[in-house]
Length: 369
Image (tube, rainbow, N blue to C red):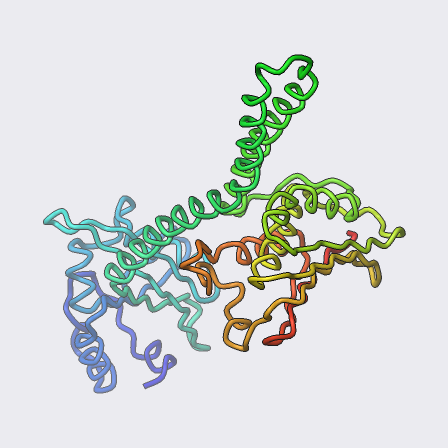
């Protein structure tokens, strides 16, 4: 039976009447039997001006058990949802949090749709309440687990990124200690202490940056030269590069690269990660090339190496969090995922081209506006 037939056969009756008032037609009686067998609470409501609130035309047994009272009570969330549904012309949906007599909490999802008929000017709606308590609880549990996983990833990401400035501060502090009794070493001691201060300041900025990244908060940006950011990243990565014998870094910076809006610290983190990955791409000598280019409204940093490259499976999972082929060597699998998140937050793109045994090329593109 269609919706129009439901309107033609409607018989308004009080809430609490189980079924249609006698004498129902054969079609209405059949419809009532069908609705009585529906497990979800189901009600048909009508709004007849000048009444402010709709009244219930029909409620199946499940709805009567849910409502437990006659009429529409203003303080009842079920009643409030039915009243609210008549303020909407189309489909209306909302989640209700209710308490059972035993004190247990339930979540019901109301789906209310208009029932129209050319012969009646009275707005009618059919409302179905579906119990989504289990789904909601599962979703809440998943979100809690996601937050815990996020905390774990954040901690690992911070540890991953702090290695460079902490290592630099440690070297500077050890140097300062060795010079403490050396006459005329005041200038060198001052440089070491300034290095420690700058490194610790950088640690703080890295922690704040990764916290913003994890929370998906916007970061402050300014017009920067990509060339300057590349040079700073190369300088910061130099101790790690020089720790690997035979590793060389070359820069080819285009002099006409215009300023682009970016957070320089975040882009430095991206480039340092790419340099570290390139250093680790080969156990023996490796040459890393960093180029900057400009065109089509984009500035680009291209980091390439002549290392071992990646196979198709490694390339497909390159940005996956915690995916690494260097777990035993201390790899965390977080660098590329963080880099991708930072570049995307800048409305840019990061692409990888690689062939096994033929090296890797990573391109970072940032828009000028």
